[in-house]
Image 1 (cartoon, rainbow, N blue to C red):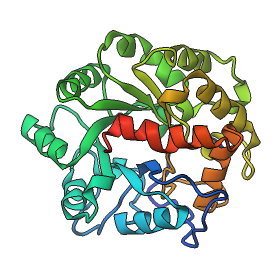
Image 2: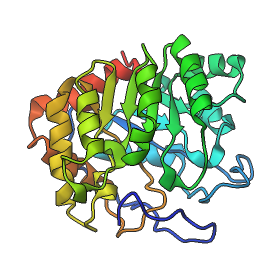
Image 3: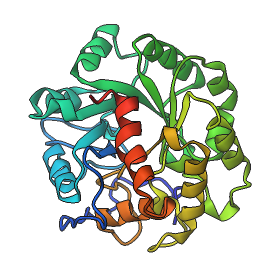
Image 4: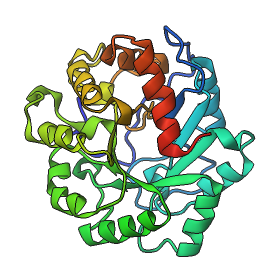
Length: 303
């Protein structure tokens, strides 16, 4: 079961995240950043979109921060989840009430309905990027190519980056558009959500590796366990993570993707995800520092 699972039905039950977090071995360096943490809130106060295809789990920002503290992560990037669409009330509430604002950044979802004034407000609160959910397997038509172009041009003007939530062939479908957008940093989420069984020579992987030769393209080596054909161990993720890191070690970040929505495998402890990342780099301390601390600080503007 990989990233190409069928969309969730509204009544499908998924396993909850493991609340018995343990520290990874070894602990990450000081200043480490989880570059993808989703947040969910009280469903009455912050209702999801009526047509959302999965229901928000019980996983608040405070829950996520507690998990990260156990694992030794000081900084976090909130990636606003799809059930809320462009209704940013939960994100704004979270950022306004956070105690350690200097340790928090965020990305949101942008389309034509989001006003310039709201973008400015989000920017002032620590939002540094917009996520484009253009993976067909998500089961919803989130963006048209024309709207993607317009939104990317808008966020470029305020200095944000673009997060690309894609899956293999979807990335190739958008290739012409993405190559036509200049002076905008692009971050490919979740290792491109490739089918690892097709190997490193598959067209989407070759395209990604070519893009990583360019200074404005980044990769988040996350969700290798979700993309894997294996329920545990996830050995088939290691060659992909290692190849991306070798291609662009200065433009690689990592994220937990907590709380692992739509998870159809045995639920793992979040420390296991960190330890999978360590396998990509043979636990090299210099690469640990670069990918968990230095790169995310540069991309997200942490001091």
